[in-house]
Image 1 (cartoon, one colour):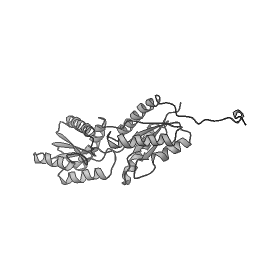
Image 2 (cartoon, rainbow, N blue to C red):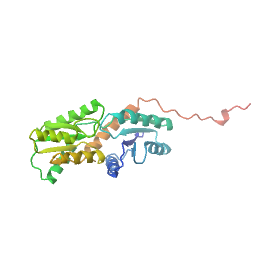
Image 3 (cartoon, rainbow, N blue to C red):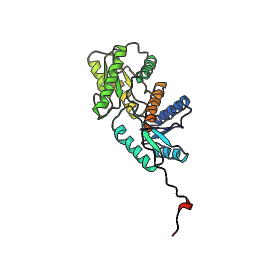
Image 4 (cartoon, helix red, strand yellow):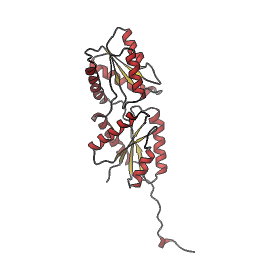
Length: 264
């Protein structure tokens, strides 16, 4: 039995660094699992679309596809956009069995990546002392998604025995700059900001620039490509692959043999 193809579905950005990160992650995944067919696609802003990728797979005879939303939050895009993509793909390619996996989520393993990015930033900036942390992410109007960030921030603070605040660049408060200012007003002069974004882009840049203006001594790079992120992708893929077994088989086109057709 051939394993289902894995189609990474990223949000997409006008910033070319974002797509470059996604393609680099796909290369990392292919190196880890050279037995799998793995492709990148984007919801918006840059090609290819998921329909272009899935259509190509269908033309090549692939029968099963796992669409993996390359998202940290189970918010609007995960709840609305991704199911709409899967429904449309099933409509366009009825011979395929297609399922969407869970999003990556705010998994605790991401803190290992965050720590490496932060250590590199502290070394480059020759920062030797910290007395507070801020964990910056995109933010959502979904309170449960924001609560997941707050939980991860608490775990990060416990790791380093430092007070920490979760901050959001949009749709929720406090912003990264507000969180930094709050710590500084309390007398904490060495505040570092962890960038909980998968790839560079407008929101990470905004978080960094505003946090530094507010007095942050360090702002880490986005998570980017790492073994932890790749393993998390493969874990979500594996669970979705098992869920494919419970789906009804895709309908097959009816073939009428000429010798069975009666003439009037």
